[in-house]
Structure formats: structure tokens, C-alpha cells
Image (cartoon, rainbow, N blue to C red; front, side):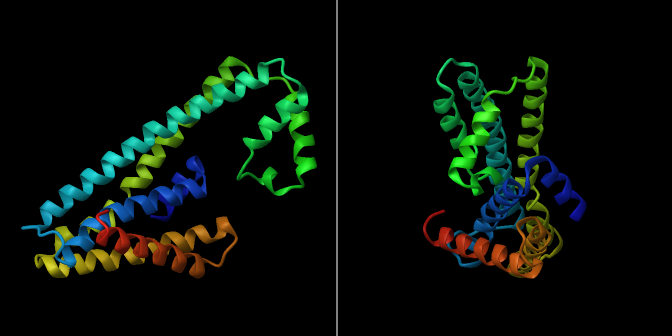
Length: 218
């Protein structure tokens, strides 16, 4: 599991990888929680697994497609103003907005704009390099899909191995919580937080969202 997570993070970045895995867990656990609380009645574990797989695969594929399309459109938008004849200051201000939630967003505003002015004066990469960028976008989007369906492993295995449906649902919930804690623990180093603390936050947040969504028609 650790190797898989590292592979995903290396292609999507830690934040996006964690976001997609949490989506996958929450969507799958919605059916498990709804069944445990009697909101939805299933005749067999197979029915639950089919719904979980359908939910995660569908929304994983939707995210994959949308992430790639939006990234390509953003690339075209930035290329458009980089090649335009608008004043350097205006170009720098537009570029500064595209650095939101990046390390450059943490520096002083004037220094950030100065960095953007310097970048705006640099040569734009070749068309071949831009095509390479789009290939990386496609790979990143695909790994987002993998991150979304990955939670189906811990949520489905207990349902496949345990005959009693109630015990299987409980085991799936427990194994999912353990797996989420492990993922949060591994992600701790990426966000500069102690592993156990990050694991606890991720697990608690995912379960709170799941339970709220379960009882609000999620």
C-alpha cells in the first residue's frame, strides 16, 4: 500500500492524492453506513459492493476527465496572456493569481509580483514541451482515478470474506478507518505534521463527513 501511495503522490502531488482517496473512502462508506443504520436495506454483500464499485469508478472517471480538460484549458489560458501584448504589470498581476496555493503565494505581495514580472519576460517553451506537459497532465488525471478507486480494496475485502453481513459491514468500517489512519500517517511528512496526528485528523474528518452525508441524503 505504501508503494502505491508513493506512486500516486509522485504524479498528482500529496494534496490532490489525499483529496481523491478521501473521496473514494467517503463514497464507498456511504453505502456501508447507510446499511449499518438501516437507511438502505441490502439483501447481500454483493449488492453493496456493486454500488460501491459503481460509485467510485464513475466519479473517479468523471474527476479524471474533468481534471485533464481543466488543466489543458488553464494551460491555453495562461499561454494566451503570456503571448499577448498587454502591459507587463497587468500580465504579472494575472500570473500572480495562478500561483495561488503555491509556495510563491507565501511570500510578500510585492516580491511575488516582482517574480511574476521576471517570469513574464522569459521565453515560452516549445510546442513539443507543451505537448509533454499535457501528457503529464493526462497521467496525473489517470492517477487521480486510481486514487479514487483504491479505497475499494479495504471496503470490499471484508464483504467478500465474511459471511455474516452485519459483521462484514463492521469489519469493512474498521478496516477502512485503519487504512485511512495509515494513509494520513504516511501523508504527515508531506504536510509537515506528525504522522499519528495527521492520520487521526484524516480518519476523523472522513468519518464525520460520511456520517453527516449518510443522514442528509448523500
